[in-house]
Each structure stands twice: as structure tokens, then as C-alpha cells.
Image (cartoon, rainbow, N blue to C red):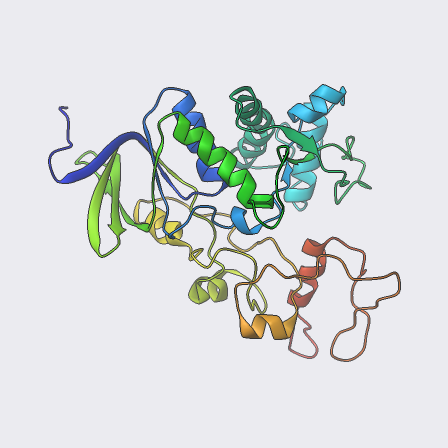
Length: 339
């Protein structure tokens, strides 16, 4: 087949990446480092996505900092921990894939095998230095967790970094990844909302239809399109459809409206794991004022705070991780007929 990209295509690259958070620019950097031409499309008028609103701490098995310290993060043990915590109802340590369907097992394998690899490439390219964040694993008490410390790392601020003036946390991480990708030739286009995949007569994806400002543009992809466009927190229809219990807001970028769900389904993709989220408790009056907020109850203050439900009954271990405490609000009471 000849070159399908005529004058109607505004730009063409080997790889098109949709989304400019850590996942997006991580993919862009890896592709560019492998010699591909890359275009990154970002729906917002700025880069960062939800990563830019985060603290920027990464949880990566067998990461370069662990290796430098001589910490052993055994692959088989780490996979057991990932399977046990991510899919507890399916976990079977005696099964070849730990009880998981093959596709899910391959995902956690890739997470272990490739996460550290990408970071090593970023460090080798001079994009960033890494340092440990002294957080324990949230399920360090489980027997499957044989390496409870060392997996939390972050990009190290350079000398002269000015907190409050220079980017910090997740935005600093994104800036490092963006700088590295663009030094290798990647191009970033802002205010570019991808609305459809473009496919040829054989069904192959050859690009995307994009709204850039008030116009529509076709962006071609010779080798592939990578979607790293975030979740769907700020799509009320999707949160009602897929998430249980009341969802009042959260830390995700306001542009996280689940665009890929529609686009992926149109292309025949099968969705999975849409009923779960990164849960956290929020302060009700803050959420009432603004659905988009990074202010959550990361940890209850003090040693004597007790959380009770509307009837004054204690319902949760207050020292549980935020993700676990957040889910307590979605427990259905079959007697009272309410959450």
C-alpha cells in the first residue's frame, strides 16, 4: 500500500500520543529514544494532566534507586503482591498466572519488567535524578509483600530549585519528561482534543481526528497511536454508570472526561476495570464549591480522631490508607436501603 497521507493531513509522525501526563510523556520519550518521530496531543492549554496535580511520587518495582542501594525486589514475589492487592478475589498463588486472566497477568508483568527500564533510560539520558521517598507499602503487612520499603521514588529537585516559584511534585516530573522527549524531537500540540480514530480500508488505525481550537485537523500516525488521556471523573454520566456510590469530585484534571472510552468502544476495544478508582475522602464543603480539588483527607489528623457515619457509629479504621477509607462511603446498607 502506498503512502496514505495526502494534503488533508495537517501533521504526520511515526507515533501519536494522546495526553501529556507522566504516562503520555513517558511513552513519547521512549518512542523518541527508539528513533520514532512523535507528536503529543493535549486537550488542555497546558501540559501535565492529572499527574501535574499530584505529589509526583512514583511506585515502581525494582526501580533504579532500589538497585543502587542493593535492595532485592524479587520478580516472583512482586508479582504475587501485585496480583494479591489488585485482584484479591482472583488471586491464587499456586496458579501459573496467579489466578489472573492472561491479559491481566501480562499487565502486571509489563509493569514490573518495563517500569524500571523506562526510568533507567530517563536517568541515562540526563532527564532527571531519582531519590527514594520513605513511604512503606500500604499493604506491607501482607505476607506477599517481601519488599515493603523502597518502591516509592520521585524526581530529585536540582540545586537552586525554588519551591513556590519553580514547578514541584507531579508538574516537575512532567516537565522533566517533556523536556527529555522534546530534546529528542517530540512535538507537543496544546488545545488539541482527539475526537475520533482514523482507520484505513483494512481497519488499521492510521491517525486521529482532532479539534485544535475551533478547527478540525487530521494527525497521521505511521506506526501507532498511544492513548494516555486520563480517566473519567469529570464526566457525570460515566461516574454514575461505572462507579458505585456517591462521587462528588476529586483530584483529576478537569479535562479527564473519559474520551477514550467512547473512542475505544467505537474502534471495538473491550473496556475493563472501570468500576474502580483511586479513592479518597474529601471535605464536603470544599467539594460543594469546586468539583476539581486536590484537597483530600490523606490522613486524619492526630491519634484520637474517630470517623463515624451519620448515625454516630464508627465505620472504618481511621489509619487505613486513603484509598481504603474512601471506599467505605460506597458500602450499601441493605437494611436501611442507603450507602
